[in-house]
Picture 1 (tube, rainbow, N blue to C red):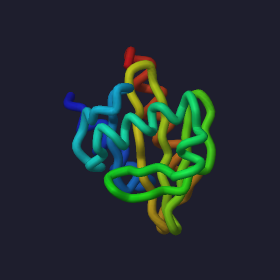
Picture 2: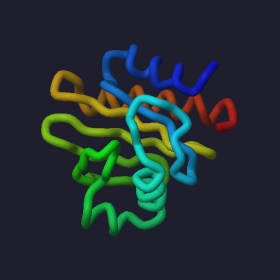
Picture 3: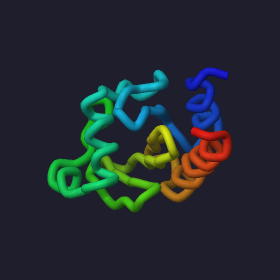
Picture 4: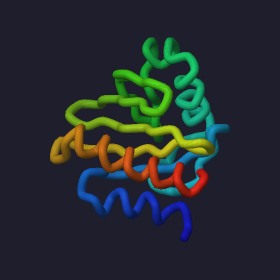
Length: 123
């Protein structure tokens, strides 16, 4: 199964508009969101020190999201009536965006479930 299939499965839930998986070095593992390595590295670094993200926001595929919150495993951002959920696994970050027709809570739930699965299988 390619990494893109995980993003396809997220989108199939109806609670994720688009998504991607990136390594903890910031490099993309999937298509989907066209996140750059620089954008990815800034998000990964935000799990250790969120101050830069609080000041400038999250940049994902050239789109700016307002930083909302994070803990050791999860990060959230908002852009207009949509947003993004980001979950950290042992080796990667999985991201899923949502739009005005989707709910924040259900998007978080689905991206979190995929992150839990990736952790179970060692990623």
